[in-house]
Image 1 (cartoon, rainbow, N blue to C red):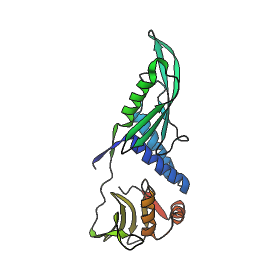
Image 2 (cartoon, rainbow, N blue to C red):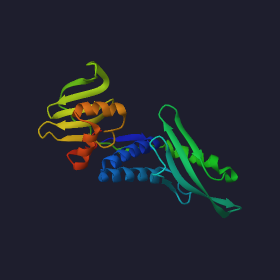
Image 3 (cartoon, helix red, strand yellow):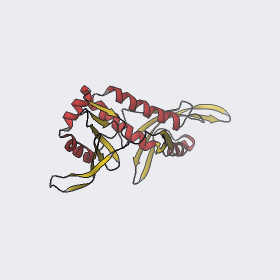
Image 4 (cartoon, rainbow, N blue to C red):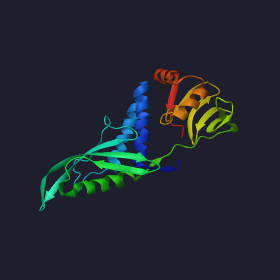
Length: 228
């Protein structure tokens, strides 16, 4: 099993999107897993100690995948003695194209906001290393592009046909797998509904609407798992 390096802030955004999907579909087990993953990344990588003596927490209620909000407090010192706290909300807008933007709320006592911004920028862009799943071993029969409404091949959307079953891959991510022997359907827990494009061709692959897929996830007919 190899290790896979990822950037903290983008992993939080992806996990939050997956958590929102699970909340909408009523999948409490995976909702809890995504919640725990976000909290673990924050605990392992975001400011704690050295003035951030109460650590950092993630604000689930105020956050969206493209707007992530963290709460922290800074413990100030004056002439070697502790001299009170300032409370801050740290809002981070992550963008793969433009990097990240950070805004700090609260009092700028002794110019502390610049220090907080630097600390959170370092934390947000930290590489996190997690054990990656063993790659799916495909006894490959064929790969074909999905077809659009005009009957033409769609780039980056693939149906992968193997001896054991059929996979739907969107760009570089496996989204769904139909097992040939049992007919059972597996969906990737984080990526199954990640974008509008993915959703459109997932619907085509499964030959159903999103509401049908959500119902089958909730009933346990479909299994959410890690396909990547």
